[in-house]
Image (spheres, rainbow, N blue to C red):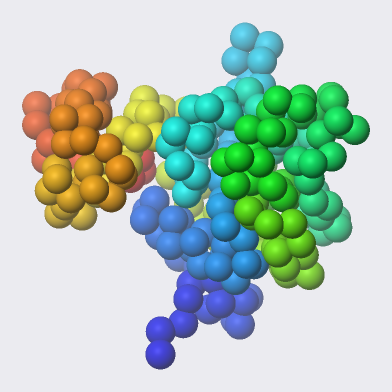
Length: 236
């Protein structure tokens, strides 16, 4: 039987040798399954023009949901309720939004509810000198296993500490949008345009447009060169 990445790390409590975005995605997906959550988002917060901006490093949120919620709200969700390493995490229930006007408006809470993020936990994850934020959410209240969150937070910090250069590059030099990166990643896995379109729920023309934009942004001459550049730079 194959043991998941997260459970392997739980048993040995040793940091995993994560080296690519694919490794990171596999680790986070396993972690989410172990915690009985539905969604995850790994975020770095950068300050630009006196504003805190969320840079999404890994996520299984639907792309349209990210666009609807917006990076400003994501930054607020990540920072304000975030539990520091070792502290007891507390859930953020979108139904309580009226009591938290400094964090979440009623309209924003309703949107999160509709999108299936009814209960959220924000964990501050320390990896060396860098701090990241892991958002975990569920469609149902009290589904996420709170008793495992502190351990998961620590394991995530160990895992991220194995790939500082890749994450730093993703924060500072990644010109790709989330959907452009997704398309390149699936193409790099050997998927055809039609298969990528089916996976992402968009048209083939849309996939081609995303890939074309990625090629232009990476100053590549074709798909193969764009994929090679993205892999070398740690973007996929």
